[in-house]
Image (cartoon, rainbow, N blue to C red; front, side):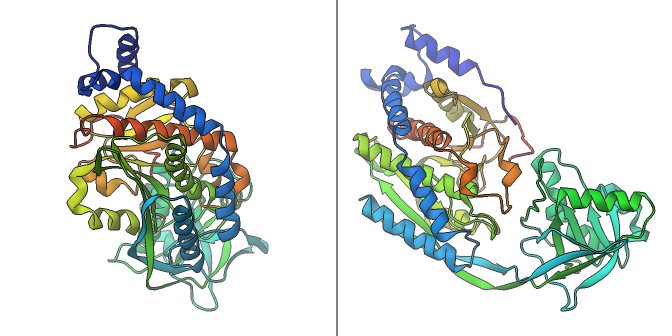
Length: 481
């Protein structure tokens, strides 16, 4: 969804650039004449021009996803991709390149299928939900009860025992609709269902099931859960509405293994004056076990990598260190983000800003901001530096704007989540359609430019951005991943 621009900071900084006598937060923090907003604009334009002129990062993203494919936590492909990224960062000559160990969940999908048995036999396109238990070896064959809300489930509880519940819930926004994926299996189990099917969580479908994680309630039995396509969910709903018997056979060989070792990847571009103060930016290197993980979130990782390479190539060395973090296990555990915060707990006060890209590297419109009121007043003035590429929106949110940086934001570090409007992201999210051809080099480089400007300003300010609880703003229900 596209967000409206915040005007106050823009008006303020435009007045400053016109030599108005009033001081903006950026200017107020500046201690030298060259550190006014006008001075930041010159470097911002250089970063934008440099980013848009170089397609190396887009080529590297294709190499990552074509060579290693999807990268679920615990898989060999994830660890091989981590090895590749670490090696490439070393070749680029960055500082302090290393990995930090993290134990991650290891869920294996196994063979799976769903088939409509009555009123006719036909395969149903499906993906088991991440973390689901499997079915018995011969599967589960049972009548289906189609439900459209948790309220309806409770009202029809007597009909559900011994049956498969299908939640056919139309997509409104991701945060609201995804609750049926996360909580639906246990809600259905509480009223006696033997399995759960879910209309895939997305606004658009070409017979494409969407996977994603679930969250079992430990007080009730765990039942198998899978997503089916929007098209198949609609068909089953119509069959039931006609009074026809609807029976499905579900077979899932999913299993949860012991936690497996993985790693976050770290690389620094060390600051010229305050190397121990850090701007973190990155994305998550893992993905679900479908598609290529190009959009979610190989693109975010490589775009952040390109920010470091861009500054190195242009000879722009800001006051503070800019650190790339490729977090592991965002998709089904958040162990990478949690692990990074724990490993650097003694350094949180020296983190100037945390930036994450995890919404697809489509055309950016700005950032979602989780920051203290004092920090937000400064951050919003970055917007005018990005207006020339249409990426100047700085929308405050309550809490963290993205998943991996949540432990940092909860610790008071200002956080930015790259905002691409998400118009196409949920079309391909967690599907076989998350492939390289959904992205364009032009939009990717715009993402690089947007993150580079924000990272540079935060790294160059004379004083750290103020830590503290995020400014109250818009609570957007559609940003959860």
